[in-house]
Length: 336
Image (cartoon, rainbow, N blue to C red; front, side, top):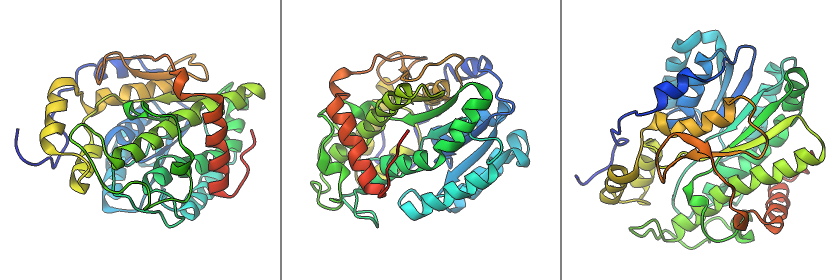
């Protein structure tokens, strides 16, 4: 199976084309997506552009982001896609990006906020604010972005009858309940850089808590939105085992081994487009209700279906802990 993993597995596309053909049009809709240089974010952004949406892509400045933007501009015209610099490792960068979105969308509002970007099983390091780098990028900065853009979501919901906040979790959400230490300023002191063959070790424990945070955030949002009879919906998705650059980056950082990565994709993997179907279901599916969780039908792969939420991971204590620690991290209250 080779000794390196320098590009995503060449897994064939099985269901995506038929799925895409049945998605509703998104004319007059405004979508904000984080992390669109490659993988599920790039595919989701391109698909929604093709459906007629105006799409804002939020990425850390890089040559990869510029190349991805050029490709997206060819989907439905350069005027339909706008790139905004947003480094999720920095709260200041997130706030600056949010201000630019507000300026662009003050009249239209935002119909879909797709919190897609993520990093996986990286070294035990602190963000500039002191948090675990994975928690900063995967959850805390998305919590802040959601808070900042929530008035625009409410504006679009009043105009169109609904708006959506979509969070991207993973199978790694499964495991121990959410723990406070992973949400606080303990970056660089959360177990070190161990990574076992079967996705164990401190790198993967930290990743688990970030993906669980995405999951718990969705349902904590849903609680608050329902209590206020809001027309804004909170939804969640996971991609199964989708072949994207996420695994490439993790291999390069020492969090995964190439042999095990290739073996898993041979057994239960699916293509990047197929892995994007649950995310697009959450963003686009007609009549989706708040609190819906989408994932592949089978373990790792398959057509998207509604997944029953795991109550043991979504206790009221976890929801309250998530909100308390996230507000403390951004230094602001987020009231629905």
